[in-house]
Amino acid sequence: MGTSGVLVDFGTYTIGGPPAFPCLSSRATATGGCRRAATIGRRNPRSAHASAPPWRHARGRRPTAKMAKVEPTKILSIMPDSISHPQRLLFVSGCLFTEASGPYQSLKQTAEHLVQRGHEVTVMGTRHSDDPAYPSHWSVNTHAFRRVGPPSLHFAPSFRPWIERQTLPWDIISIQGVWFHVSEAAVDWCLRHDRPYMITVHGNFNPQALRISAWKKWLARKTFMRKVLQHVNCYQALTMTEYETLRTAGVRQPICVIGNGIQCPDLDALPEPKGYLQSELLHRRTCLYLGRLSPIKGIERLLDAWACVAPTDDWQLVIAGSGDDDYVAGLQNRAYVNGCRNVRFVGFVTGVVKSLWLRQADFFVLSSLSEAFPMAVLEAFAHRTPALLTNTCGLPEVARAGAAIEVPSSEAGLQDGLVRIMSLPSAEISAMGQAGYELVSTHYAWDAICDQLESVYAWLHEGGEPPKVVLTN
Image 1 (tube, one colour):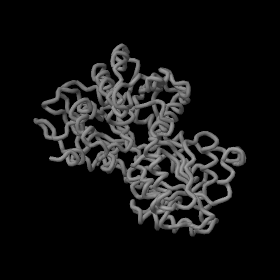
Image 2 (image 1 turned 180 degrees about the vertical axis):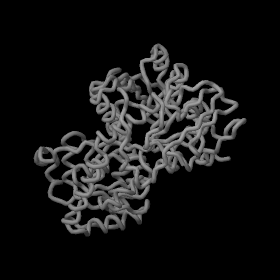
Image 3 (image 1 turned 30 degrees about the vertical axis):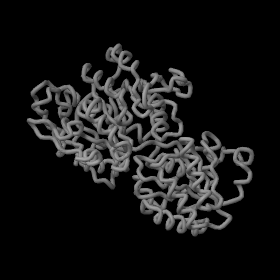
Image 4 (image 1 turned 90 degrees about the vertical axis):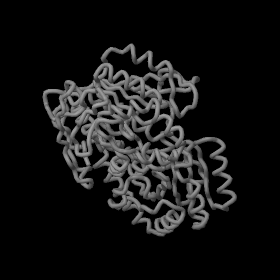
């Protein structure tokens, strides 16, 4: 079987024998019940008994768990159960210095809001040898361990001795992503101390994402990730699209569907753009891309679509973000060769400059081949700026809310979308931006997101009936 085939076909679990893909199926069945494999001598992770948490049942018991079934279209309206007491949480992540990354931003804000609500939060991740061990730009307790080898592996030899010295300081561990080598040591600690853990996959199981460095992911799955994915108590999907992707891939464990939160800024407090943004860029209508510059973002086809549309001189495409130097140079050369009119690369932006670009833009564009939860789209909505995005961005609800135009994930789709949105009257574009603002301020406010996370943490730690945000097939 080819490598890509192995990665896409996750397989199913067979009682009494080794699973075809054990890292996705040993903990729970598709119907929400839980059956312990005869070949894996682990405790049952799920139970509907209120007397003990779902990971603390004696060997040999096989209780079933009734997990609430929720219609996909109603997920945003669910009000979660309340928590019993603050939790001690450890977040395990990748690099703690990649400010341009969406998962980095969402983790940082999640941790900060949970601390504000009284939880004891520790964040660990990796760093380059030149970065400090205790990042000053984090306001929560952090530990950054020096990584060696390929950056994407996040192999940090000093992490395992550190976590092995810890004696039951955390109630729950939340692993923020897949394919991190540091995850193995964190899971070993959980299994040794009988503590639950969950994994937020951040789009790592999307078919398009699995095709990137497929052989490396196959090797990781056969080695250090085997244990990590085999014993997980609960997955977190950021959208219903990601939930469906996980189920299609063969995941049988409980999955909670909880998105990221967004803080809507005070737009009246923003300064005038003059003095912050390049003056020569302030006199045209703007299509804005803001984010990482990498192949999965589909920027090449955006440039090709922009060249084919050939908008009038009063429009410009502003590309704000950073990436590999050679890759960025290739994008700039592509724009030149294609004869793209008024394309401006402004580099990485943050803080006030970032907010000003999001507010200044007529619309935001996201041409990605695959996304888990595109925070940049929500940030645009928080600035009352509508969006044009491909249907592989995982947010179909934003188009239904009238805040965005969703197009097929292709150059032709982007061409059509650009023509449609640039031909709209200004009043209609403003109305779309207002719809986006109302969507994020209602459904993605941090209080609502933290309520949902706390309900899952309480269930994992204390047991009882699973909260309504935990879904089964």
